Image (cartoon, rainbow, N blue to C red; front, side, top):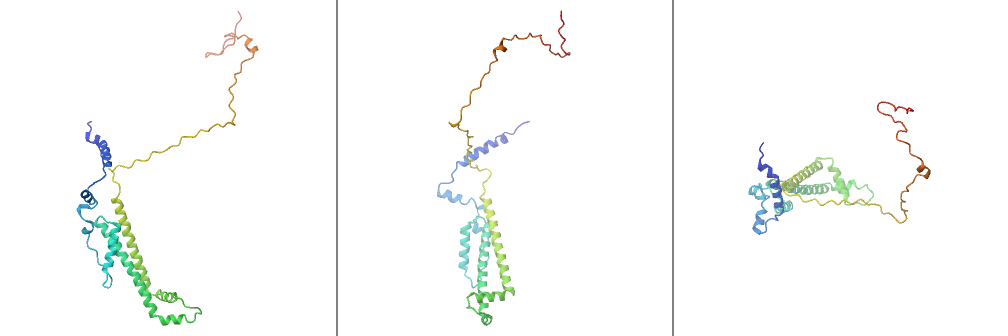
Length: 249
């Protein structure tokens, strides 16, 4: 069976490409750096110019310059590199602008209600034997509004806008993390060598007594003078049965 030389040499070529890629430090000239800065922009489209114009959420009595300053600060902070990322940043800026508007609505609503119920507030606190504090009027008005739909609608809108801001922020983080992820063909940094500690051996101290050498025991003299028995003095068993006894001649 024939083998493909291209597929057989592809691992070595890939390894050589990783090594050569690790030696590159990027462009060094100003023109090269400017050209390299556009690598993250797909199909040559500038991120902001390719996106749709932002939807106008500024009311006639609000400042368009303040919203533009808020939007530009978000664009500078998150630096989107694609039209989708620009849309997510604009969604975050719009949600923040509307949350600020709701804060103004809440302040205006409570202030108007305090001015409208001045006589009711004076009558309600007439029988209380203590000095009035600034929070009494606000507490009374808040209790009166809690039975109507105004505060409930305000709180519901605030929760909806907060969730929209958080959802757009998470989606933007996911897109940017995928964009900045290391590609498979890029070399991985070498892991630091592991240091394995050598097993420590106990160091003998001077107090420990040295081990005495083994003593060789010699047989007594009486055992040396005894004659050795002949080889056929004791019958031994064989595989054919017990050994025959010695027959006297």
